[in-house]
Image (cartoon, rainbow, N blue to C red):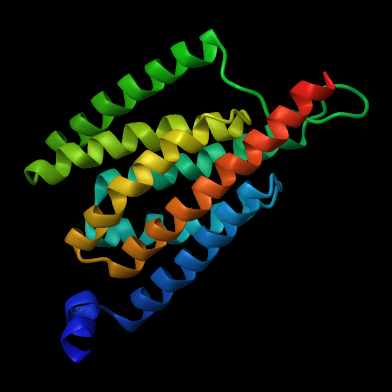
Length: 210
């Protein structure tokens, strides 16, 4: 048992206690954010903003610029999503869950393309290329950038991209030495699957009523 514990959490022996506490706190708020998203509850955004704020600080301190950029973007998109979700499309109805349109797909491709170039330039400028990990970072950044934008627009396809990004992030963060964050993404994956099914049920119900 001790060997397993050391294998999973041994890297934390060199971390500041405050950083460990902050990472755990960020993970808790991350779970809350995804849970509220699954429930189609606007609290997804304030809890998500707390999560990303903490991670921006930690990732900047740890020198993980790609991951930090993702969280800065998450914070900005949380503000945007909070506005979109609270905006009423008419006197009685707020922005509903829908499927993406052709225009949404085109914008998604644009966001993904820009994010790939942007993160690649950042890595090159700060000399942060570390082999295959950097390429995977760029891929997950593109997935999360598009996924978060689609969530802000209340498009059901956001869950598919987030699930793919979460699955990739589980071993990636463990490899980087952040076990708590890796476990967070494992939980995110499970919640995201349930979130997709819940949103799909809600969308199908609206389609039948319409």
